[in-house]
Length: 278
Image (cartoon, rainbow, N blue to C red; front, top):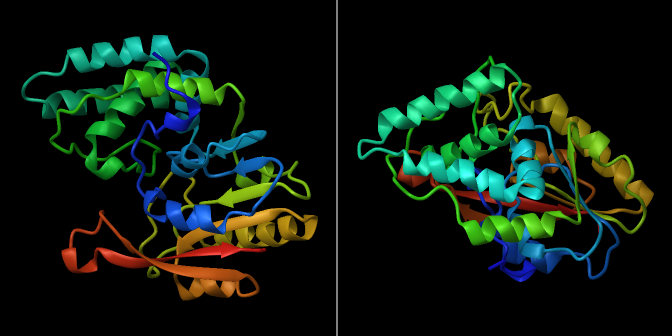
């Protein structure tokens, strides 16, 4: 059974995902638009919630993540065969097995083996690592610890539904500016970049290239350029002075959210901001 497009859900967890903001994003969407662009696709929570019936262009700089999207699009059944084997081999004492699979994943990354097996390992690790984080060290190797769970790594019906939807989606891999180069008047661009720091030392490595202060400034410049083209732009991030200064000329909505990653329960609430140019 293949689910309809209306039933598609994200196939991975993603730290910084936008599920909490979905009602606000939906409310603030332009009433009509042409093509849909998402240059920082991540787990795709917004894409799979909106299910735009337009031309859709998605992108991410995370090569391993984009490999998963492409394998689901073109080889969903073969991917699920790999995942089924990985799950079937999980022993009762799961921790050592997790770290063996993580080592295998990193070995393939070092060899640039972006294939079905890597995609299956990516999904398995995502479901069994701490909080769905994707974090790498300075060598670009995945280093998130085990989360002590024994959940199944995938939902077959949902993988098939995602694959069905992705048939009409253009999947790019690379820099966010390049992903938007063809955006034109009337197109909608949803920008969910890695978060700006809450303080000067809080940047986390999302890919080994990182997303630093100059990257945020470059993104703000692109936001202005897309606005001048007549594109509809929406951007989400932490509600910080830095972000407010970068986007001081645009409309803003501040929302209180729960933060699951902070180890201190007192600091698990924060503010995010949705910025639009319309």
